[in-house]
Amino acid sequence: MHTWYRSEISMTHDAYATLRVSLEDGIARVTLDNPPVNVLNVALMADLRHLLTALRDDDSVRVIVFDSANPEFFIAHVDMTLVDTPDAFDKLTADLPDGVNVFQALGELLRHQPQVTIVKLAGIARGGGAEFVTAADMAFAAIGRAGIGQIEALMGIVPGGGGTQYLAGRVGRNRALEAVLGADLYDAETAERYGWVNRAVPAGELDGIVDRLARNIAALPEGVIAAAKRAIVPEDLAEGLLREHDAWADQFVRPAAERLIRGGLAHGAQTRDGERDLEGLLRGMTA
Image (cartoon, rainbow, N blue to C red; front, side, top):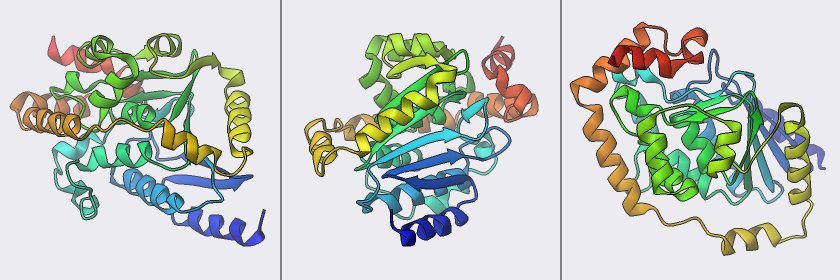
C-alpha cells in the first residue's frame, strides 16, 4: 500500500466528526461514532454522504465495511428533534438527485456504491438506521446483540428513507407490512430467517466472518466486482420512492405524529436508557 494513500485517509478521517475511517488492503473500514446512541442527525448524514461520494471514484477501495463504536446501537434512527427543526436538513438538499428526499438520497447513494458495502450489525438499528442496513449490499447480525426494526408507525408516520422499498425487496410485501405496521424489533435470527440480513452469526465470530469475506472480495481479480455489480443490478425504485415520500410527508404533518415524537423525546427517546426499549416507550404513549 502506498504511503501517500495512508496519509490521505488520515486527513480524511480528521474531517469527519462522526466517523472513524481507515484503509487496509482495499478495504475501507468505517466506524460510526455519534454519541450517545448514533442518531442519524445532520452531522452523521453529512459525513456518510461525503465519505461515500469521496470513495466512489477511488479504485483502490473495493469493499466498505461499516460498524459502530457503540456496542448497543448501530444507528438508533433519524434524529427525532426534526419535529422542532424541520429545516435542519435543508443544508443537505442542494445536490439531491431528482425524485428523492434527503433521507432516500443517502440510501440510494449507498445502494449504488461501486464498492461492495457490508454492515456489521452488533447493536440496534431502527428506522433510518434499519434503512441504512437494508440499503447496503450485505449485512451480518450478531446473535444476542443485534436488533433491527422499522419503528416509524409508533411515531405516527411511515418509513421515509427508502425503508418501505428496500424492505419489500428483501423480505417480500407480506413481511414488509408486518415489519412496518407491527413496528417490532427483530432479533438476528428472525432477521436472517426473513431475509432482512444475510446471516445471523455468533457475536464472537462476527468480526472474523465479515473480515474474511471482505478480504476475499477485495482480493478478487480486477474487474470482477464491477462485473458482478453490473450483472446483479439494484432494482429501479424511482416510482416506489416517490410514493413512499408522499406517504411519509403526509403523515409527518399530522398532529398525531407531532404529539408522539415530542412525547417520545420528553420520555427519554435518544437517551441510552430510553432507546433500549423505544418500542415499549412509544407504545405506552399510544395506549
